[in-house]
Picture (tube, rainbow, N blue to C red):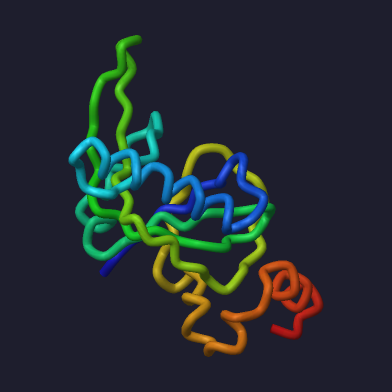
Length: 145
């Protein structure tokens, strides 16, 4: 069964900010002759790698709500120039919007079980997915979505 990671998307105010960043990284990688994957570097190396790579995703918290995910493709450990062990989370280039789910701030990343992970927004239908992000947030806060 897949296990997921949960991480704050620092610097992003909207899902489009994340999409723009991922697109830019993909274009840079392709220009260098590499696969269009993006990576996220973190200091702590997950211990449950096999479960994460069995269909897991990195879920992004944007402005206090779990809002999107990127499928995990790999986890590469390395030692940085300052001698600290780190890892790159290799992520698929697609950013998949999820049903918004409130989340309080935290440091680092957290494991997220499939039962606790929000559903993909597309699962609610095209009408909901076509709504502007701000409208969806407001409807969720009101308990209408």
